[in-house]
Image (cartoon, rainbow, N blue to C red; front, side, top):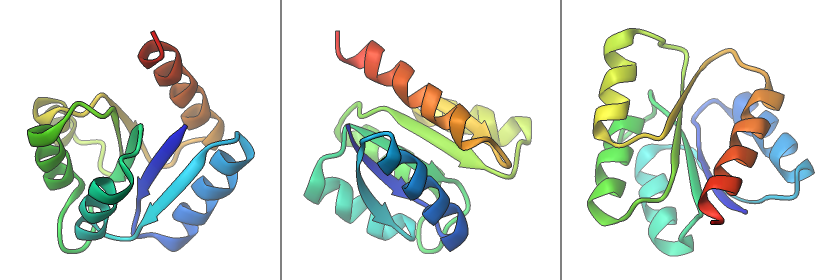
Length: 120
């Protein structure tokens, strides 16, 4: 599966990259929201994983912009588990939300679930 990861924390980005490459996914990496939108248009990923707090554009702004164009599945990541942020992410069109810290295995399982649902 071709996955775009938008994450400004370099350690988190590398951790996700290592795990998801090990799972056999093709990855596109973005370090801020603006770069994420550019790469989404360029590479047309099958899944987007985005942090909420990022430079230039937040993950919520990425979700809103992406939903204007298509229905690519989106998993939100955030250390902020406040209910209002989670609800806003879902209102804007996010498909799933994971609160940091989380196990890379949990993310891997959720991606497999998306692959099953969206391959039908």
